[in-house]
Image 1 (spheres, one colour):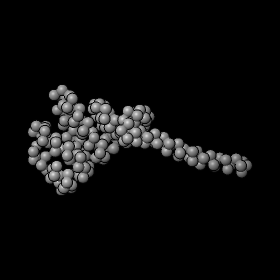
Image 2 (cartoon, one colour):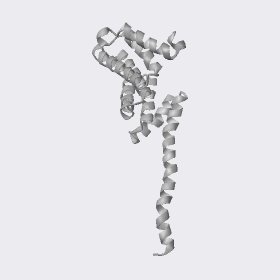
Image 3 (cartoon, one colour):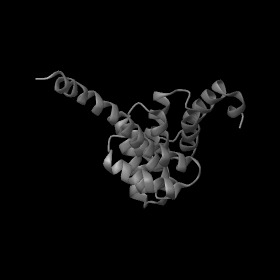
Image 4 (cartoon, one colour):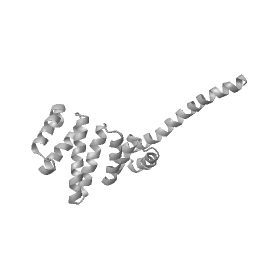
Length: 180
């Protein structure tokens, strides 16, 4: 085997790797573009990019989360629940995903019949509690728990004492926010 052929055989994998890296970064940029559009308030445009991306990359928790947020923004709470559940399954230690999953459950519960609403409300409380367990500094989840505990009947987990405990934790962590 001549030295030119050997050099070509050795260089080919390196060349393929060098070409693949920019292609992978460009592909990831597609999801980032959808997320940026969502963040800029262009929800429909972001969703048009994120939906096919998530279909092709079902393990991308961040893109899945933002697709759920797109559904939430469009008041499609059942769709939001579906996507946010998937995001939370993909990244079970992400408190932000749990927070928004709780919010999606809560809004879906407000629109559901009484039988379904009770189950959704219970899931909302569990998601908020999980968010706080994952990140005790997650004050939005604590605030949502205060509201839940104040509004829900006792048999669904509502409790003035639990609401006060969450409010005290908020106060401890952010005096200005805890005063409101």
